[in-house]
Image (cartoon, rainbow, N blue to C red; front, side, top):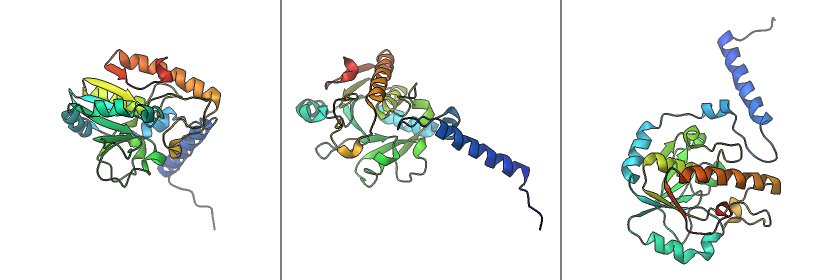
Length: 232
């Protein structure tokens, strides 16, 4: 029998998908995921209704953004005092601590989202790179809020800050965004949240994060309430 050929549009689609995968792995370096622009575009969704709904819920509010850095343990009292302010909305990043009940949890990493997906007591905001997730309350467009560099492109803290600016919040308090400390293998309150990076990669990430946080401070009142390498 002769060799069958596929229809031209199908062949082109297969070729396009293969090229996208090849491009992705060509941009995979030293344990860091880098989203090439073609992959970012493939993650796009129409989130206008979601943004409108979140804006209704959060516009004009003060938000306490809690990341899982180790500093939240030593500064627990300061965090609790901020939570006690009835005008403060609490959003955690990629985790739901036992001692704090947040109003929302924000996640852009599937590995970390899996650890919180069964918790029904907290509203979940996720990004469109997790598009197969079915039980989240809100999904926002990944590329609209991703970081500006390969070191920060999927940093959940930065992404959530950018989202909050878009939603029109009044002020952001930040806790637990400690930065990357290359002298320890325990940068988080929970070891299951760790990603392993080389000291050189950590230094690059810290520098890029500082630069982007400086940009964010020009757009919104941003206050760190726990110690951070990123404010030094």
